[in-house]
Image 1 (tube, helix red, strand yellow):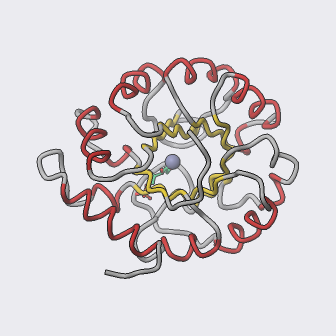
Image 2: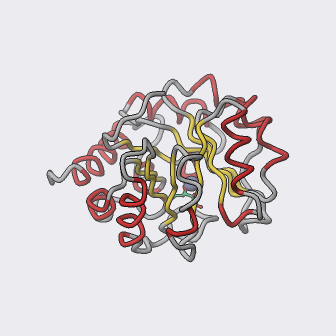
Length: 229
Ligand code: DX5
Ligand code: ZN
């Protein structure tokens, strides 16, 4: 996985058919997804439960692009090896999930993965000031984590600040929550390059009508790249 700043669309399979993850992943990739975003929730750090390392490992053979695993769990450290074994390319932990995010990011890299740090809407950009050389991706939450389909919270000021703090380091800024063709250009203009989208990608489509996923992604990408269609 090499670093590039092109816009990347990362559909969140939280909005996929939970009885059919393999085909859903294949469908979004065939329709142009750049990364696959996997939302892990523990019913404790966030008020919802999704899947654990065993399920994520089962997704792996279907993912030909980048498996981007977003941990909304606390504690994190005890599970890092399990997600490395499951085949995560990027493993993102929340800064709010515990007192030792510095150690967590080191451990994620030591386990052979790209290290991401996620910030809830209430957490300021300054919180990552001493983590910039330990991280490959900063995930700016534009909803309070836990559920898909929520309303976008404007965090463009934070994104702008982060892009300035990052300078010329090879660090992605990912936006997660409420991304659609209307909100995507705002965050890209502010400096984001990875756009997670759940409901805006999956709405109206299915594995038997995957071209809808393709059209939904095309609309987000076109808007993000500044040309409306
Ligand atoms: C929220 C998750 C998101 C979510 C995005 O806790 O981290 O990845 O699935 O869903 P949409 O795009 O529907 O807001
Ligand atoms: Zn997510």
